[in-house]
Image (cartoon, rainbow, N blue to C red; front, side, top):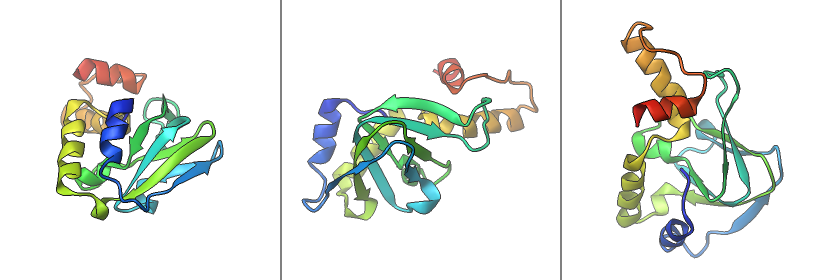
Length: 151
């Protein structure tokens, strides 16, 4: 989820004092749902490359986004979609355990999730639409086209 500077400031107020920034080199795995259960990753700066291993839209690169970006929100929905991201440039990140966040932080994150469809959700939405509508839905060439059609 793309965040504004003020959203980062707001969210950061809930982070434990022990949360430390680390640097990740280009190409390195930033986040993978299955490898980081119950974790969020706040990419404070740098470019993130969201990955779709199934190449639903013809490429494993699902979307690129400049930080700040918050990854791991699928855990708020019970892990119903997979998130994977790599650093497209040198990134500064904070790893956050969901169990250390206050109820206010959880509520704020859920409200943010309801604002828009996250790029990591695009392949799952495309698959569900195709399954439920027996292929009657036009296949979108890009996830952004799907998101625009649903908006």
